[in-house]
Length: 308
Image (cartoon, rainbow, N blue to C red; front, side):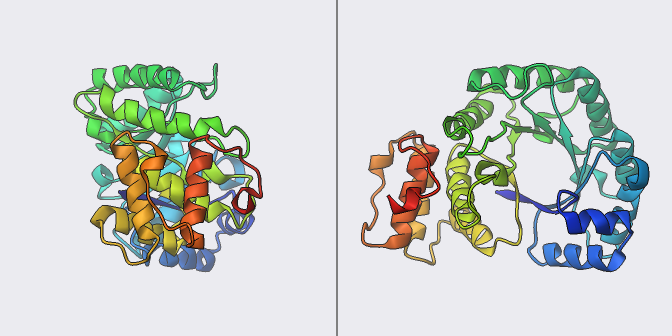
């Protein structure tokens, strides 16, 4: 599965200040750390990029181009900043726009850019009127609406990365399974197939810090079993990257890797969780299974679910 590194974002107070103050040393260090993890894209998240942040995409792109040829993901609600970024690279066909939703004005502008620069685009299965639908089939309807626009413009389905959107398990636990169901439906409903992605850290947002990496990793593996093609991830989570490689290669290096592989196979084969065998005396294997139970809505989430 392809990975989009999420670690340069102005949600971080330190990164926001670095972008605002044009702190090249900070940004260069942050980019170099991401480059070392070898992601498939590096996301440049600058938010609305207005006022004092205007022009920040070009500044970030210029720094990145001096360090790497890894394709960039241009992440801003300001389409003008996104286009400035696309104009600044020579490999726009390998880059990505993050993102649009089903609102026509935004969709029309972003899809025009995707067509013009032959780049990929992330499409969120939501709109401003209804927000994020709770049902998988409603999200699929929005995906069809988006695809009708991109298809009419002649954008290949392989360039469209649909994001089914994940709500945190600590907010609405049922939505983790709904997102997995949406992934399956997205992969089955288009010919030729569309691509899929998720903002992985959203599934654990609001959970205790010590739980978040495990929830992210288990959900990622289960989503891969449902046909996930890419994910926006914390590329500084080396264990997450290792597990992604384990699933890709089916070559385990830890005793608990067999549980991750079994979870992937379970989702791919539409099986039940009780088909997964594991060593109940192994603490890490128990933790993985308990997390899978939460994601599948089989046990009620609490911040102490691993201790129950």
